[in-house]
Image (cartoon, rainbow, N blue to C red; front, side):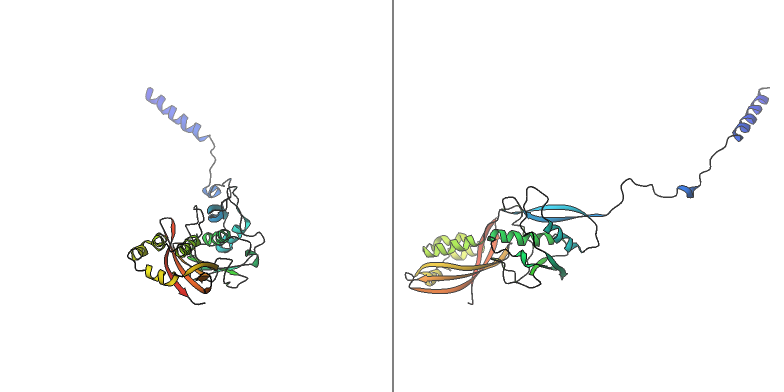
Length: 288
């Protein structure tokens, strides 16, 4: 009897199930990616360099930009010219400066600006901040090792005190560190010579030259060359870099025998950066 009831219940279950309608979902109707509430866009990050508010050093500012078909080097310079977005930094590139062209050849970026980039009233420090804000910003790209700055498409001899005749690599010693003029050591050098303090000059030189000075190899030269020197005047100078190794060309007049006699000379100072200080590596006579 129980067996017959079980068969009846099973038949009843299948009959009821057959009366229920089910929706058939075809795969093709929903075969796509879900729609995101945030449209997909490609972005990239650049680093720009601006002076701090006190105009003592450069600091880095990062920006995230939407991918563009425009040349990446051109994007960097155009963003740089827009000015800083941070209250802790200042703009220093003249606001009416225009980018005329930019091209990369053999890892050197040749960037041409309008003449407004040149400001004759800039101090030496301001000049270096302007130039290395450009050089350091472009050098953030792996493909760029050096930057040549042009004015109206032409190579200029100099800005004010900084040479524009050659290309330069980025400078790390002006980023987050207060600007120090490399001319300070050259001024001290001639002051000590004028006072005949030959024994104190050694600390102005790089470590490899100090030994030669302490052994007396160079002192005879100073005595022979400058023993009758009464005063000096630095007429002009031209800085060629601001990194671990660079040169400064100094145009000067040396006065002898109570200023009765004078000689004009051009010296090329090779400068190194050691232990957070500029040092004189060598001094070479240059033609006038």
